[in-house]
Image 1 (cartoon, rainbow, N blue to C red):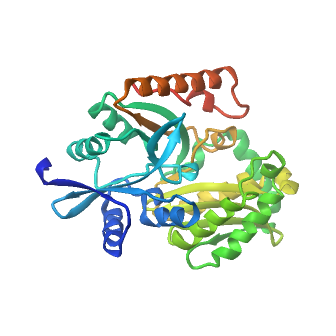
Image 2 (image 1 turned 45 degrees about the horizontal axis):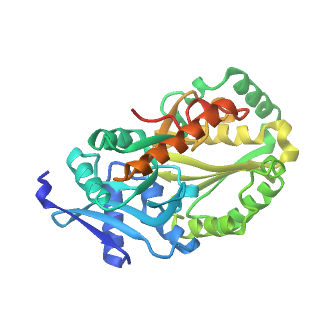
Length: 357
């Protein structure tokens, strides 16, 4: 690519023509996920009081080749341009036609000219490329996403004891279990209501790890069901015609991203969370899907299904060396905290806040 043909614009109000270009780029891009789609961006704007945003778009000649939505926020007391809707982001926020060295160098070189940057959840491949091109950037490992490769025999890597327990429960109760799929053809509002009710009676609620107690989160998922309905696929496990567990997720390209899961605590002895995932995986083997991404957190629950994982990083950049030193100190303190106070039933402390060298 001739770099003289690149052009970067900052858009503060999106129009129908750009939406069409964004959707067309998503269909062709190397790193397309729901999290860098226009539909995700729309759901975020319709939920949160973002105010002004800056949509960085890059063209090669007249062809859109890269998109990154950013907004003004603060990280560790420093004003930055940062990722929109970062609380629920679990994958790379920018959309790129391909991870081409000239494209990435030009695009991020333009954004870095006048801004402090805090860009979250960038995949390992892109992080390594950006860091190589811009050695002054600072990358901190922020998420470990366990993943299952669906092709072949995906259950072969499961924990033998977990697999045995799951199969034993299914054998005894299989005629009572039923897995139902909710997608674009379904009543997603009804499904959401069911999800809200299940989570309120789940172990997540008991341990204060539920998300739907907060109205803003319920609103966000409602907006997702409107804007991203073409991506949504929710698996609901029924036991004796009673919905007892769900796995809410997104299907795009050849990936299923498992996003939110919960089950009725009163049924915990029959492992509803594990059974909904086991049946989900079996269902995916009959489709042209390559990977199940469990999302962030390498918990013991997820490790029972797979030893494989992918890594995501947060990116920091400022021309001000004092700001960079401050961010590195904050990251160091968080890394030490992970080592000294590891959370039970997870291996996150083995990974989080390690730096990319």
